[in-house]
Figure 1 (spheres, one colour):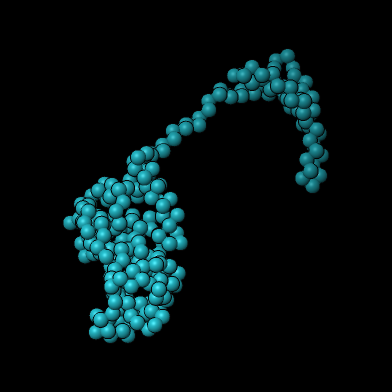
Figure 2 (cartoon, rainbow, N blue to C red; figure 1 turned 90 degrees about the vertical axis):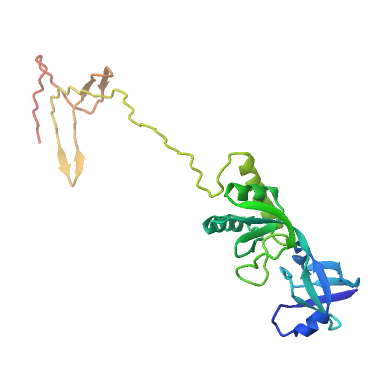
Length: 259
């Protein structure tokens, strides 16, 4: 079995005439996303791919076998969803939501193309796009940072699957608009005007015999006893503050303050 460990991208020094004569390897996107793969060339020869981790092969890439021969990659036609819309703003909005889900997307001049997914089909329809299923080569955008680091079928497939499940739950559950605007109208009308009737009508008939010893703000107040009569509560609070209330019969306090 021929071993292939090197990849040469388009325009990296391999003559077109040489590539035209090279053997071809036709693969769908999921197999082009694997760095380790046992495959069969279109001429029937078996090969083993040992490419750098995270490599995603694109149509036209040249592979170099251990014997120095070239193999040209061909993107195989496969079932895909093609989403279109006459409004470019809607198309951009759809691309934004798909990108948030780390979904591999092929971006055309007037379309978005992605692998078959009934949940994402439903999302695109609700966003206002026309979605059809076709057979075509699928060549999604490479990562923004280059290097073919794919957020999907390789290292982070589990994460993508979890995100897809979340979309599914949103679809069949709360019918959120997937733009995270969750307009639940939380108008918590908690009118915290706890009118407990605490109108403490304190009729303080105090005979204040205050013996204030003000020493460096350390107020040593020898206060008499407050006899607070709270009107609304009917509480006769005897707060025992040390006030000596000599309350005359008329109810008016004689405030004798001795400072």
